[in-house]
Image (cartoon, rainbow, N blue to C red):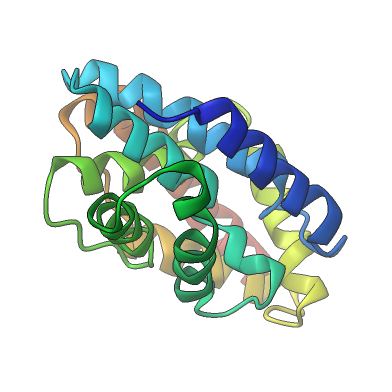
Length: 198
C-alpha cells in the first residue's frame, strides 16, 4: 500500500501552481472528477485488488499532468512526470510502468487492452453521458477557442460530432449507465449543427 493522500496532495499542488488559466476543461476539477469516477466504475466492475485500485487512482491523478508543459501529446509528459515523482512515494518501476500504461490508454481515440484500461477510458469521458454535459462541454469549448483549435460555431459542432463518432464506452457498467444519455446528446448536437447551417 502507498500513501495515496500524499501523492494526491503533491499532484494537486503541481496542478494548482502550474496549470495555465486557459485550461478551462483540463484543470484540477477534471482531474478530481476522473479520480472519483474511476473508483465508482472500478467498484461496479468488481475490481477489489488493492494495488489495482491504487494504480487506477494514481493514473487518474496523473493522466493530465502533462498539460503543465504542453497541450498536444500531453500523455507522454504525464508519464515522464509519473516516472520522475512516483519513486519518491515508494512505487516500484513495474507499478509505475502499469500506471503509465493506464495513462497512455487515455490517448484519444481510445484503444484499451484490458479491463483497467477500459475503466480509465470510461472515467476520463464519463461526462459525455451524464447530467452536467452542457456546462462541461462549454468549458471544453472555451479551452479550444483559447488554443485556436476551433474558431467558429460550425467548427465547434463539427468537432463535437466527430468526437462523439469516435468515442465509445467500454465497461458494462458505463454502457448501461451512460450510453443512452450520450446518444441523446449526440442527436441534439446533430440537430444544432443542421440548424446552424440552415
